[in-house]
Image (cartoon, rainbow, N blue to C red):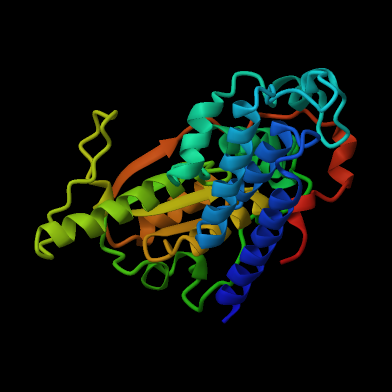
Length: 323
């Protein structure tokens, strides 16, 4: 199927990266920064497989060799510090920060024990940097304009376009197929957790992945009784996360496509879904049609706002290409 083909492609790319590290990773000219770039990007893609674990093991050995031989992990072959060397592939912030503050022994251990992945500090930092470079979607401004048009109907202003940011088809009953809950979830009667402005979806991916694992283990221990105990240790909210469905909504098609891709690779489609829609429309559809209770609505740190020129409205946003 398509999913198997996609996974095979990812694994093939990871295998190539592993072969390259085996070829030159132990050379003095290969900086720890270069090795970290490789493993961070694999982790950011959400690849969890035998191929990625092999890559992480090889990367750990390369980093360990540099430390064991007394070579500073930040230094090039000629002894110069790589933080002072211009890197054409990254912006100035990356040049200053990429190696500063890294605990290499801990990183090496995480690469070896498979705890390194999407939710490790460095991959999350990479995703945050990527998010800061994205412009606000045109739909965000158009949505805001429609909101204020409704607030001040007599001021003579109108929004420039009657644009719907969402995606998908509309069924005969007038409801969007995006909110056909029976096709979205294995059990649509479960309590729902909604993340408004979910961005790349890392919060819900972490909750759904960890609780799906804990739920499976709890059911085995409880003899399939379903009395699972996955709860947030740092939250006062009395939540049994493993009994919930999760929905993330955002206006960025690019971010939602990323989140969906990771969710599919992790096999979380039965309890986790992501939707491109304005928050108001998503909330209205949930209130109107979701068969279970809404247990929690999360509004976390939005993607950092990036000011843009009014002329930018004439340009096409990169993440609003046709599907």
